[in-house]
Length: 204
Length: 204
Image 1 (cartoon, rainbow over the protein chains, first blue to last red):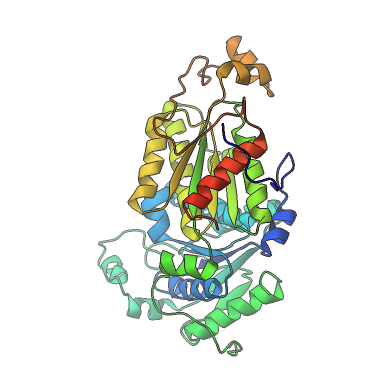
Image 2: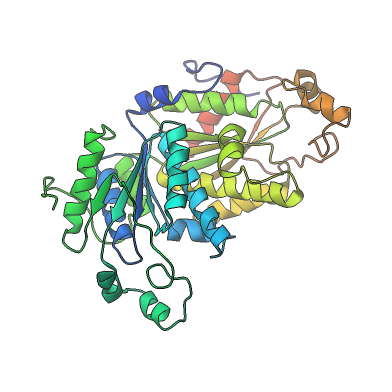
């Protein structure tokens, strides 16, 4: 049998409270929910914010199409039901990260108010900060950028149900933060996120 | 528009590599996958390990029935298909935590070798450490403990498909660690996990 080597193991029966966890880790969790049109700049800003926070030694993690659509949600398609389930799962996972003491950054179009509100409610229920960040780039700008040629395909009818073209984008009614990449640099957007995180005492 | 207050924002276009992330956070991620019969002691050990690591300032997070079955996986039942999907999603989420630089602890019976092997393969594919911890408590001991009265109900036929009674538990063939709570204290089991994490340089 394993000999007891560590003699200073610290624990008590039962679960660690979130309060104790965050205190010991010197961390506070939160979810920053980036929403906006395709090519609005969500991922560029979220990625820059993530890099900056990590560089400061702050645990944070970005959930985006790359690590979600090909992994956890690879069994979901683009039906209305699957889109809702896609966002629900992302909301649940972001909440777990935030509970763990990490700053979760989610970067998805998430066009429907109802789906985002459900994610907010999941967080509210457990008193975990949920910060909705509206990346407000006019569709004309997004369509001009069109880095993946998706708007072009949607205009040509090759993609159906494309947000902003033949499917609605429901802008947040009361987002905690509005970013306007059309007239703000990436640095300015990141700075606005950092200001908000500081003002809510999520980061020091 | 937001004025630029932070003038020292550090980032570069593109994604943060895992190497850079772990270096900046002074952390290494991994998944410790606890498997064993109901009432074998998985959650007690995982909870004690979690508390101890957090007390040392090491980001770690336990995924268990409490935070998964009522959240992310609340739309899954107990059919063979749903059980497999349950474990698959847990494996994907643990992998995200590990990638983020956290030590993910999963505490589920996870009775089928195929399902656990799939989770291991998910981690292997992306070179993220996956450590299978077999909590090897004889069924007689588990059944005697029976804290939730589940074995009693299963023996009485009130629960169908109960692992160890009328559904198989497939013990790991090559687990990285075997714990025997029948003859080891919780402290000894935690110490064995810590030794393994140290020997793999996941913690210092």
